[in-house]
Image (tube, rainbow, N blue to C red; front, side):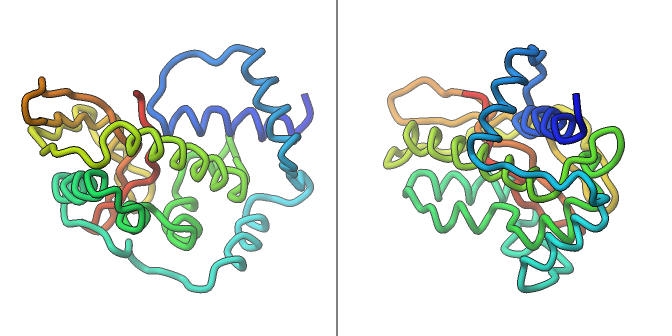
Length: 209
């Protein structure tokens, strides 16, 4: 398998990592994913080292943030905002709570294990994977819960946070949603939450539903 295919294969691990899925990926799944990336025009310049690819990616953003913007003061506060946005079908609010391209380039990617050996996933492809899983997850959540009345019963992040550089990643958080005249439901309705300097945002909206 050549370098480009190794990179794409590593992105499969990245997307599963973001979704919090621990299922084993088969060789057929990997080949199907590779074919899908190629069909969509995915290209990796395997000659360039990761620092050079990151430098080029950073030139595609207009600013250099030094903190997470539009962030919340805790996981609970972030999930409360998320609940209100979902109930009102407010996609602008959902986007504001999500890691943006500049934050990914300057605050998230440099410390991510996916930027380091043995993964070394190029930033442009990892960012694309995150966008794809977020879009799918957000659409599924809105389809299920938007325009419905519900509130948070509880928020639990049972796994110890993972430290990556200046970031702490809260994975596998579970939310109990309470609805009028219905049984409370608990699930993993979004992906990883990033904490940096006491500020919290969603890395992605990938969910297990």
